[in-house]
Length: 428
Ligand SMILES: Nc1nc2c(ncn2[C@@H]2O[C@H](COP(=O)(O)OP(=O)(O)OP(=O)(O)O)[C@@H](O)[C@H]2O)c(=O)[nH]1
Ligand SMILES: [K+]
Ligand SMILES: [Mg+2]
Image (cartoon, rainbow, N blue to C red; front, side, top):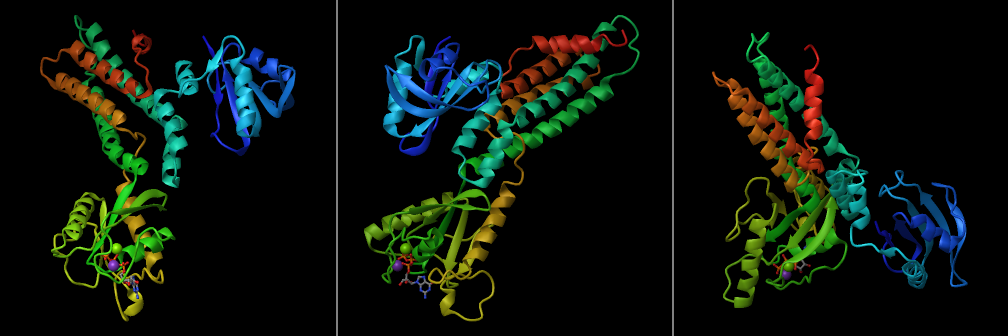
């Protein structure tokens, strides 16, 4: 096994830069640079020397095999974060035999291979590193902490219990079966199917938390759409003017609302026009607005050509600073009046849409539980048949276990058989 090293923090100038070394030669490589390594998991200040030259002074940490992020021996060098310092330290490591630069994701892959993280946790780690909003962080940290694996454990227990009940029937096939196990088996299957069904349905919501929402601002020319966008962005993201038909291209501004990633789209004002350029802008506006998750109609009350509010779409009166006695949602892009209320309303609507997010957060997860549900349905159909083929019913349960094991990257079924026989021995 190679010993790998890489800069673990972002490239560029910073206060600190962490270089991580992992593998059997990590301690030797670390001590070659810093002399004696500090005691495992205790930081020690060391002079990093190479070729008789002082490279940097760094805080050095070591982690023993079996007690590190990768599961291997690991050394971390917390250097000063200048590009030249990092370059010199990386060159000193490259000089050492048996060491090579890590490939992308290789530390995490080793953590997976060594059973420190399961597959879902690896996905959670990737999401946590990418998380930009609170909802994304909360979801990712939950997955990284092992929530998917815990769910799988619970589902597995039920499946193994159902399997053991069926196996007991097989063994008694020649004799009198002491009790009819099918009611308990069916109850377990039904409970699992309901739980898995809920989880499968929640994946779409979890994916929205990760991918975010698009909210299109639409309205007639000069309704104040670009002014509102700039107010939301806190900067001049779009050109505004008193000329109707100013905006042509769709302008995007990314924000966080109620912890969710939201991209606002400023679009061309909708009207019938003979100008081919303006018409092209209007077509873009309509296409993006229709594809968006939510549309914000900024109006003075008159209808728009080509687009009508539907579902949760918001109809908001614009330029509220020029009006008096308005009821309902009203904003002024110019003064910012009504903007907090508008954002709160959008947060409510989108928050409701992600409310069904559960433990499973990816399409891969949805596919796995959908497979498990199909296997459970087959098993159930077999159990309720008048002449049930119990072996078949049990085999479908094993398929369900395998499908769920894929969630955490465990495809080995030997331990399932072991567990089935362990529980089966009871009372026999
Ligand atoms: N008083 C007042 N004027 C506004 C407000 N919002 C926009 N305006 C003015 O209305 C005119 C049009 O504003 P824009 O933001 O360019 O309108 P738009 O909807 O983006 O227009 P198009 O891109 O041409 O469709 C400008 O002169 C703005 O200064 C507002 O809230 N209050
Ligand atoms: K305008
Ligand atoms: Mg505009």
